[in-house]
Amino acid sequence: MGRERDWDNAFTGETLRGKVAHAPSFAGAQSFLRRRFSRDLDGVDVAVIGVPLDTATSNRPGARFGPRAIREASSGMNWERPWPWDIDPMEALAIVDYGDCPFDYGQPEGVPAEITAFLEPVVDQDVTTLVFGGDHFITYPVLEAHARRHGPLCLVHFDAHSDTWSDEEGRIDHGTMFYHAAKRGLVDDANSVQIGLRTTNDDTLGFHVLNAHFVHEQGPRAVAERIRQVVGERKAYLTFDIDCLDPAFAPGTGTPVCGGLSTYQALEIVRGLAGLRLVGADVVEVAPAYDVGGITALAGASLATEFLCLFATDPARGGDGAS
Image: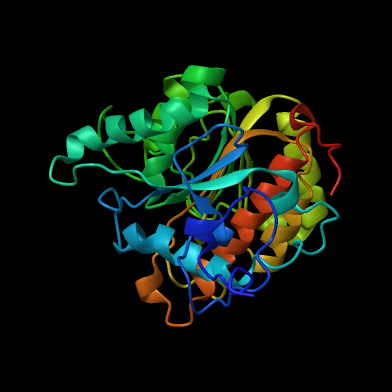
């Protein structure tokens, strides 16, 4: 009976798979989906990693608290198979919460290299990463670690902003990093796609853009099909800025923009991507201080759980590509 009532699976879990049915959301150690905290990657399929950096933000700070908020929001989501999937990622995948990336916030110029260095040993063991930001700049050093292992990656980028405004190399800015990622060959811009954009940047750098109008007019199924056409069977990285969602669904973010996707639209698009060859994914820009109801963190945790489902359907992992 004592073991059955153990609420701290993050510390005491004996297996990396399976649901945790008896742990309430209001208690226990808040790892993502109550996965075990571990730095041991032996036999691990997916490592959940937080990168609590928000010094690259251009508007409201606070995304440094995003990883903690997403983990907490996930605590009520670990007891059943995600709806409407037939596959249960908590059974199909060995998942650990790898904790947060440490860095010296007093020396910001060195932080990007610290993030890359923290990710590299994970990526080098062919472990898929699920990363929580932090502001969106963190995707750049994360991509660096993945590109060193896999070569240029297709970027599947959900956002209100293109994040491809140009500036000098070396600037730590959450609005410019994909400009540099494309110029440096970290991403394959010709086979990358941006979804939900609704701010002006006339230079697409070769990315395929499915802006907010396209999403609202064509619907989730058409958007997912277009993404699949662009990416094909190439290796890809999925990054989701929570401000892709309309502020009505995600007010807790640094640079909200009206006219965005609903949570339903975003979830349905993601579900339509089953079978993509994803080497990693992230959810960024959750800033819980601007959201008294916690719905932004809940949206982030829900999307992250969907990304686990996508990982489980990757044919390279033995998945059949079906939801």
